[in-house]
Amino acid sequence: MTDPPEPGAGEARPPRYVDKTLAEDVFLDDEREPDEIHEVYAPGGADEDGEHAPEPPPWREPEDAGEVPSRAHPCWSCAAQVPAGAESCPECLESARHLRLISTRPRVDVRHGSCGPLHLGRLPSWAPLVAGALDGERGVSRRHAVLELTGDGALWLTENAEGTVNGTFVDDERIAPGVRVPVTDGATVRLGTHCAFTVLVVRPPHG
Ligand SMILES: [Zn+2]
Image (cartoon, rainbow, N blue to C red; front, top):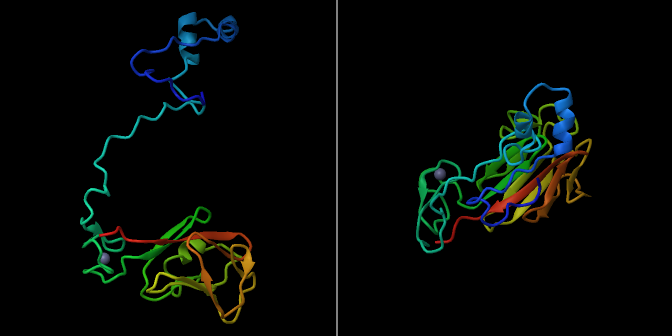
């Protein structure tokens, strides 16, 4: 099941594998014809979860093919067309370069530009982008920390100056309250003991 298909397997169907022993065992307790039972164990029709093997995705035009360097791209914030090479969106004025905060548990995937800090905490009025996902995360304070992407592309994290009960960590290193510390692209930022995020700097396509 885990082996990749042989080259050319699409044109000539390989002979079906039938576990005779298994089929006969089942047949002893089953009044169906053996052929029907063979279908049940035929490989290729179903995977281990009983679902059909996924079909290959339809072919699409490559979006950022290198041969079209001057193409505009959609703004991450408002989807307006941003000219290649522009530093910010002409519609919403958000910076083309932005940070992306990702976590699978709790499920978070937010983007934020360089116009002010991204607030991280459980208080909805203070941290509107993440408070909903962090609701119920007891290890996270209501006003926990702020993450900033500055105009030069640097990332900074600052824990609430009053401190937090469970701490704030960058790549497992606890940071001090109220001190702005640098965060590298791809680092793990953790609020409390187990609420961890990956922080990425997303750069616009080159013009
Ligand atoms: Zn925009």
